[in-house]
Length: 186
Image (cartoon, rainbow, N blue to C red):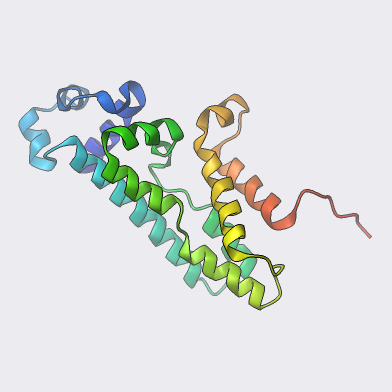
């Protein structure tokens, strides 16, 4: 039931922004308020559950990649950058801006998570040490990668250009790792 409530919460956010009520949620779900409140005491609690779920899923998927001894360092970097949690459609600039205004503590958690990426930093530093990645300022590299991947939250641009988030992330990674200039076959 909790997963169903969280899914309905996201549907309400997409249709009505963060301004919907718990009544709206019960109507969408076809359940009583009592049933809803048995699982969640407030919209904030549902929002926290969604954030917890996506951050845990992101961390779990990242950890699996980090521990995979079959992957090369470059494959790990690419896979870590392209991890997409189940509720990824929740993370777009419009919704985050609404969250910043109506649920600042939750926005702060998401904002911090979107701008910290310790595992990726570790992989990049390893790549520099091993001579696989050019010796560049790691903080600058991290900012470029984070800003580029966070650009996928501009869903309107990707919708208008018929690009999925997965396609966008794959292209971003290829450009960041392999550049813009075509290699001439020799």
